[in-house]
Length: 115
Image (tube, rainbow, N blue to C red; front, side, top):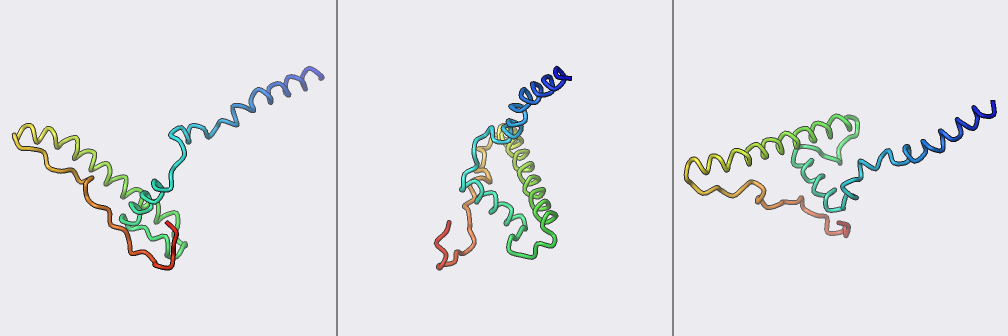
């Protein structure tokens, strides 16, 4: 019985580091900056998500906006992949990509100094 307790104790001690690193794969890219969070929120708001409205449909509305943003990014990456081939076959210079569209923020409250 004593050896069984020792075996279980050793197994728990050996498994502790594995469990403690369970979420390290999520942070492999490093911490998310405030600017990245703001840019993500702006993309979601442009896709139709409004964080100021009723939270009765919270998970569904943000998931729908995320799906819409993902679809737009997929279409943009497909367009970028097809554009060089089309430009080479047509013999015309490639036009500016859609990434150069200037960012337009919502009007800011003059009494709020936060970013």
